[in-house]
Amino acid sequence: MAAASEDKGGKEPDYWRGTRHPLTCLVFLAPLLVAYEAGVQWLGGRDADAMRNGADFWIRNALERFGLNSPWLVPGMIVIGLLVWHVARQEKWSVSPSMLGGMLGESLLFAVALVVFGELENSVLRNLRQGMPAAAMGSERVAPLAVMYVGAGIYEEVLFRLCLLPVCYGLFRTGGLGHGWSAGLAIVATSIAFSLAHYVGPAGEAFQLFTFWFRTAAGLFFALLFVLRGFGIAVGAHAAYDLIVGLVLSSAG
Image (cartoon, rainbow, N blue to C red; front, side, top):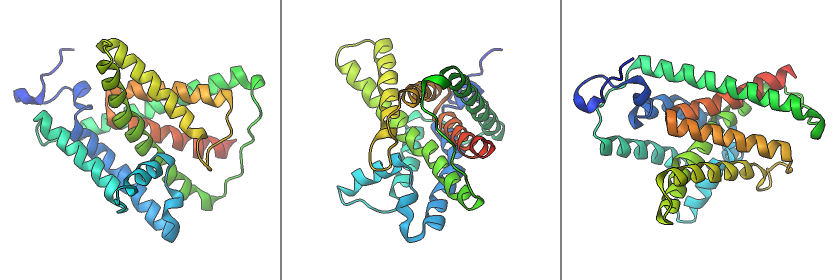
């Protein structure tokens, strides 16, 4: 199939390139962002911060050191950042509904692929790791968990892929490495950081080699999605994966 030209040339953008456009990613991301932020405020009440994802909390904590503590500041920065990126690329102010549908389908497909990979790795290494019995989950816990899983999909991708990956790439390039080496090392470094972050802080898990390696592999997976398929699909796949594993498979187990 011949690739369609970019929207700068006056034609409809090719789907495979269009999914990486900032405005498309923003429109795709917006319902998840609204659902998460509204869910945190509604379900968390006065203790809303306790429901926030770890990456979200870290970003907010860093901003508070500069006196910036509005609850809507971080999502506002995401929206403004993507809009500025869109303006800088001089793209059209239009998003195809069919493209959004395709992005949803891709997100679900990639999430299922990661679930299958995780189950295969789990079955191979089952005898090499400690048992992790699933906790019983009442129906009253479904909504708060769903909100937190959506938040993980958004803010972990914002922190580790949208922010940290380009910074690492720039540092490696500044150090004299070529484009390929810089990109590869940035992907690996941020994937390891993504995995290690799950063991940091009071709410962090106890370190286990199995979960560390799987999360590193998942970080590589999401980083490649970010580079090849765009920020929106990386967020969608991450959120869908967490929801499938955290709600569907946990309940079934």
